[in-house]
Image 1: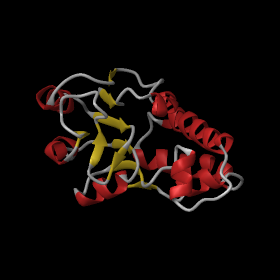
Image 2: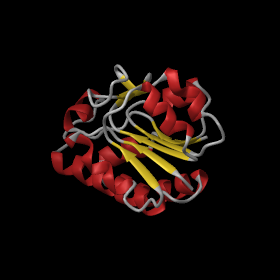
Image 3: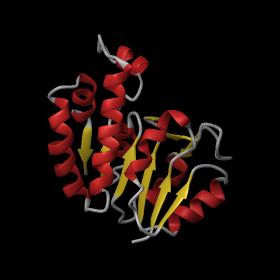
Image 4: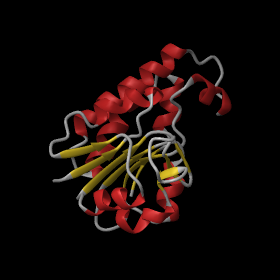
Length: 180
């Protein structure tokens, strides 16, 4: 299966790299390109793994692409919806996925920094808790990333759920993982 990974280069999301480390036949795009180039990548892929910082309106380009604010946004929805089992990991990806009735495994608000934990109402969160949650999530998802979306969801809800019993950041994130 030909997979496209779009993960804008950003040291604050480097922890996500293990998610796609074991994906074979993957094209990993971390920057460069405009909407035309991104569209060609999207059209030529059977599966998409899209991750980084984002909002309900899409995956931020963070200045790494010539696509405006978003590298994945409303302009490319038609290329996301065509029979693909995609993975969407960014803050509030659920709102984007649901708005456009997309399919795949995806996250809601995902705490990956201490400041986000505070913003979301979690108190007493340390950097070690955030790091443990981030690294565990990425490692576990990387172990099952090649499975169908429902199997990914079931596995992550079980395995990451073990950490969620002990770590409030993982619990927050675990409660915001979805499949459609």
